[in-house]
Image (cartoon, rainbow, N blue to C red):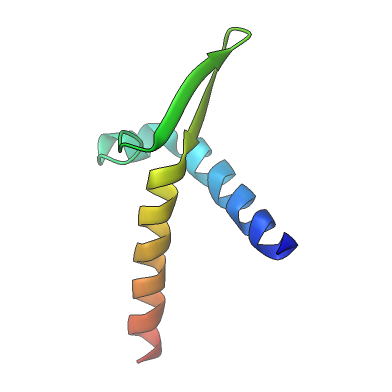
Length: 66
């Protein structure tokens, strides 16, 4: 369980770092991507984009295995 939490946390950090590039290709604006301001800082939680990228990564891994 802890391993999955670490993977999800790292995926969120990676997507947050690549936010500007991912927005140009359409990710980051999906319904389910949360964006809010707290104490003057904008916080972005790309939950839906993380699911989409995970599905793409799983499909690529499955295709490379076959």
